[in-house]
Image (cartoon, rainbow, N blue to C red; front, side, top):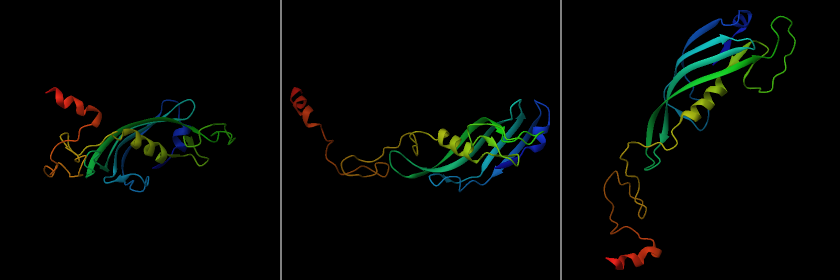
Length: 169
């Protein structure tokens, strides 16, 4: 996910380029199990200070259901928008000051979107993925997956502090 933007940096402010992406990103992060390639469109626009990168991308990840721990495939859609600034002045070749190292156009005029896309995928993940809306999860006493059938537990456990309320029937 590296793009050479030397020609775009030489163009006037407002100039743009569009790229269609279809790229395998299976090794993007050890915590992510990516099942489909990254697909979408990226637009790069020349700004006064650098290159503005915008895009809409999708991929699919293998996650675990928060209720029953079964694997599930979750499609993830996300947008990116970030301005990258050059490390070198195009006309003089002088080093330019800049704080954030990962949002920088390197000295070879390459933009690397890997870290931006990795962070965007993590931000787009659901907080509590579930395999289906009516997932029953596990029995809290015996551990039976309630999606596969009822468990053999006789009655639900009651907090001992609330046991006195049974006498009010």
